[in-house]
Image 1 (cartoon, rainbow, N blue to C red):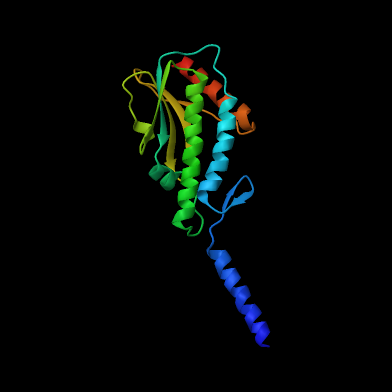
Image 2 (cartoon, rainbow, N blue to C red):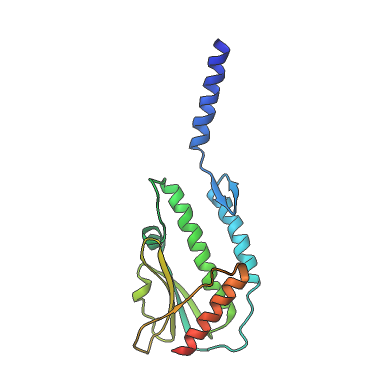
Length: 187
């Protein structure tokens, strides 16, 4: 009987310890730290960037790519269910930032514009650049996000830049980059 209580005690200790250990998942794989999961994600992002080639017909000029800040991603870039721990939220925010930074780097690597500057902002929709184009991710409400392009010296509505979610990997981002190029030519 004593042995049964001892085993039950060890089992409860294991369950409590296991519940307190944070697990981070990326592409179905579990990691024991956020840094390791983010490193795995960065390897994939670097591989994706390695497949980006320069455009054959650049638009030219300059562009500012405005990425959402960490606080904006936490506020409007996540759909929270329940009451997640802050460390879980921080991991998801960092993961999103890493992906958005990769998209900004893809614009630079594609050479659509002569010069590309990447910045972060709490208010990407109202960001103004001194000249050229502004490519930004609007996050007006939780779970709602859309990329846009606008030219700084022209009035009018920004042009939506769509991501083809039916495509995967490099094909998806190349399609998105082509859409940026088309939108810039419409301005």
